[in-house]
Length: 190
Figure 1 (cartoon, rainbow, N blue to C red):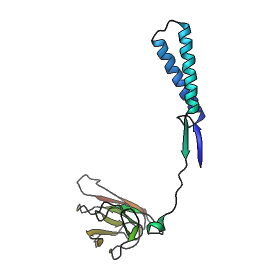
Figure 2 (spheres, helix red, strand yellow; figure 1 turned 120 degrees about the horizontal axis):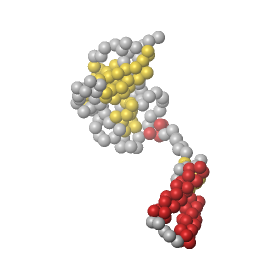
Figure 3 (tube, helix red, strand yellow; figure 1 turned 90 degrees about the horizontal axis):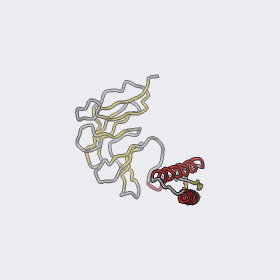
Figure 4 (cartoon, rainbow, N blue to C red; figure 1 turned 180 degrees about the vertical axis):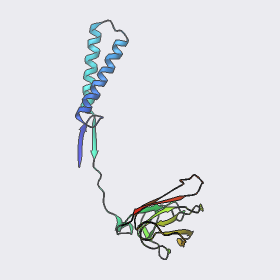
């Protein structure tokens, strides 16, 4: 849906306010230069007012409401769940994990990666071992950490059981500033 809205402030009140500000600035400029002739002042103010009104009436901003189209199937994946994006193979194209691993085929489509060693579920990317390959932590279920060993393969890393029954997400960050990623997992017990 397109709609024309006058003025740089995107509403009628804002447009008028903008015009008033222009007129006030011009008036201050005229007074600053101490123009002695009332006729010149009147002419300049009238001309400025006319030009300002002309400018305001011709300025139009088109607001377009974004229209999203589901292209999941066209790009090679479908389903639900949370999505986590990272370039797991270092080819310069951001790949996707959404319940399973998908490889980005140069921006044309996503192909499922067979035999990656990853379970299904919801996960977040983070390079916990600092080897420049993003690893995956699964925050659903009992949790699980999977190291990226390259070539689209992941191996499970021993990881303590999560203290929460229902996790709602996790975040990687270097909380203690030691140069290694730390993990925070949020959730609750029932």
